[in-house]
Image (tube, rainbow over all chains, first blue to last red; front, side, top):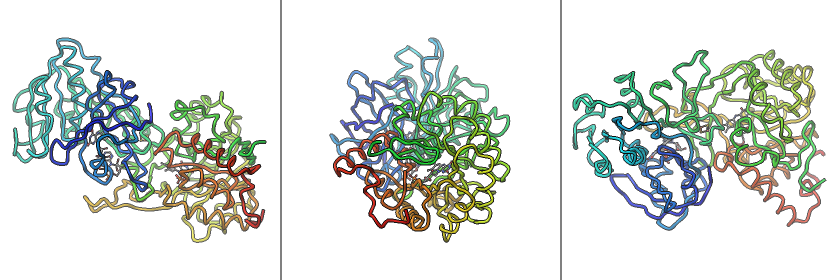
Amino acid sequence: MKKENMTITNHRRIARNIYEMELEGKLVQETAGPGQFLHILPPASDSMLLRRPISICKTDKKTSRLTIIYRAEGKGTNQLAFAPEESRLDVMGPLGNGFPAENVSPGEHVLLTGGGIGVPPLYDTACDLREKGIELTTVLGFSDKETVFYEERFRELGDVYVSTEDGSYGTAGFVTDVIASEKLSFDRIFACGPVPMLKALEDAYPNARGSISLEERMGCGLGVCLACVCRSREDSDGTDYRKICSDGPVFSWGEVLL
Amino acid sequence: MSRMSVSLPGLEMKNPVMPASGCFGFGEEIGTLYDLDELGAIALKATTLEARYGNETPRVAETASGMLNAIGLQNPGLEKVLSDKLPPLASKEVPLLANIAGSTMEDYEAVADALSASGRVGALELNISCPNVKQGGIAFGTDPDLAAELTERVKAVSHVPVYVKLSPNTSDITVIADAVEKAGADGLTLINTLTGMKIDRKTGRPLLANQVGGLSGPAVKPVAIRMIHELRQQTTLPIIGMGGIMEAGDIIEFIMAGADAVAVGTANFTNPFICPELIGELGSMLEHEQVDHLYDLRAEEAGVR
Ligand SMILES: Cc1cc2nc3c(=O)[nH]c(=O)nc-3n(C[C@H](O)[C@H](O)[C@H](O)COP(=O)(O)OP(=O)(O)OC[C@H]3O[C@@H](n4cnc5c(N)ncnc54)[C@H](O)[C@@H]3O)c2cc1C
Ligand SMILES: Cc1cc2nc3c(=O)[nH]c(=O)nc-3n(C[C@H](O)[C@H](O)[C@H](O)COP(=O)(O)O)c2cc1C
Ligand code: FES
């Protein structure tokens, strides 16, 4: 983990309220696999004390650059959207444990399932798996046509299905509807998105092998403050927990209570 | 003795800076980032008799220049603190201030007895002011008779000096301070968080699962400074001051108001390296001011001391 003023080398809008930002800095060398995250301090503000957790979407150790994708949602991320290229950003990371792409064996078929702003960490995962020659199918869910992003990028790596909640693009409905209607089969599943989506997936495929990535409001991002806990499923006495920032954000299928 | 070293009951500190309780855990995580012996002391996360899961999430919310938290005193319980959390700190020399909490006086006594006998703890910090637990806690912190009785009972079993952590959620902090001083407290720490609430505009309901939470950060600093200044007019007890410290200048302000040492809480989340950075900056500032000791910065007529 480093705390560093990274340089914004690229910053552009790629869909409605969705921005892609490329950052350069030494901490890129410390990344340890797809699905880790950065803890970013909103720029130019004295009044915001808390950092914003944002997943790493793509890393390139050769150029010491990484890409993040974020939705301008509240105060901090809207402030971030104004940050000009070449300016510096106060970043802590890489944090957390990502998707265990290294455990996937050749010959396995992996299903990647992303919802909205949960899509970015799956891209790095897809690239790593593809490099190992793993066969991939990706199902992406968005709210509507205007918020769809990275469909083409994923298509370069395998089959892609897109759903939108309002039906304005791809299949109408949720990612679970697509998986069912297309009768998609898989040996392993990696998912990131809103909790209702993750819960629907775990309920539909209770015996699947795979991992999910979780979100929670955070303080420290380091495992110190206990802001971001969730209960483990095997909780025997009501006090067993996992810290999403440091034990996660990626957990094994069925490990935590959703 | 250096410009920065301070000597408080049970805590021989080489500088006046310690991380505040609940903002540093038991030092495990931040201990991987720098040498904990750079710190003046460490205030540990609250320990209760039994393990506690704490509140449901969301547990934190951002506010203007501050944050609300409702962790709910999550901790592994006395037994695990003794067996798992203190041993890794054995190789370090930094003094420890063990924060203790409970819902009954008997709980406090049991935890105080065991932690203070551990050999590693320099002093206890009685948390009678956590706004995030439903029973006890806050009642002890706002009722002078209960606060005094609790202090007396904990003093009777403790093997080390006892500080009482005061709540700002009271109409007159001097009454509680006076009560715990008469009951034998060796020092005061303040302030704990101020009770607050944030509404989620998307749902129209309180954002925190616990509904209310404790406000901390720069937003509360003026309240902390005022309360420390007020108490310094009535007591010579050592005071560990906290609330919104973000830079070395803030530490000087706390010392000028009457604090003898300071604790840094929320700022650790914005920057986990903040404590050693502040210690370095404070040292440079004192050198620049050419004072022999930090306390020489205080105005002569400040307080009863
Ligand atoms: C591990 C992890 C990875 C994430 N990856 C991405 C990503 O790649 N792209 C992306 O757009 N978003 C991602 N998020 C969600 C992102 O952190 C929030 O959208 C963002 O913090 C909102 O900040 P704000 O300034 O827009 O909102 P504000 O309302 O101003 O935020 C106030 C506070 O609440 C917190 N907060 C608000 N919403 C969320 C949320 N949904 N999750 C966590 N904290 C929240 C903020 O961090 C801040 O502390 C991720 C969250 C986590 C936990
Ligand atoms: C996340 C969090 C957890 C805390 N936990 C405790 C605790 O366990 N015991 C305690 O006495 N105070 C606790 N506090 C209060 C702090 O120790 C401190 O009194 C308060 O936050 C004011 O300082 P600050 O503004 O520098 O954060 C906690 C504060 C925060 C933000
Ligand atoms: S955010 Fe502090 S423990 Fe996870």
